[in-house]
Image 1 (cartoon, rainbow, N blue to C red):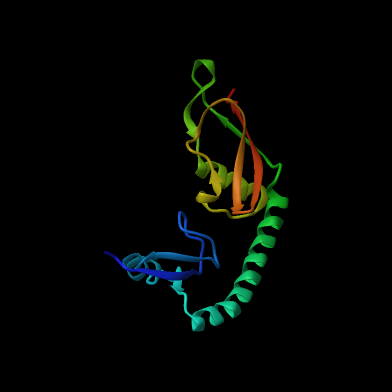
Image 2: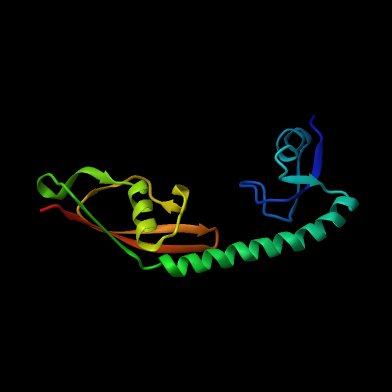
Length: 153
């Protein structure tokens, strides 16, 4: 039988809970993953008192992060990115317009630097057309850009 401990989450943990929640987990999971990763602390009176001051600081930090992401979304939302590429018959591209290409175009057009993981795209576009791409700037803030791909003449 494994023992169970109650932990207080310091970060969101997928499949376990959100920041600030108390959860009961197996002692080995807490000891080997949650504690070393600084994702949770043992739910004791002392740690709960410490957590209240930590929560105020963390809430301010998260609010500032979200506000920054909202400003970024205003600058990027509705942006149209133009690409021209050589094509086969029927509008198929020889290559593709990838996440890297989209990142470079956003940086060139708006001067903003984003990370690849912020662009919600499974694979590059391989045909001529107009496509909408979602940018995940914060877990609560998203923006949309239009990618317009035309055949090279």
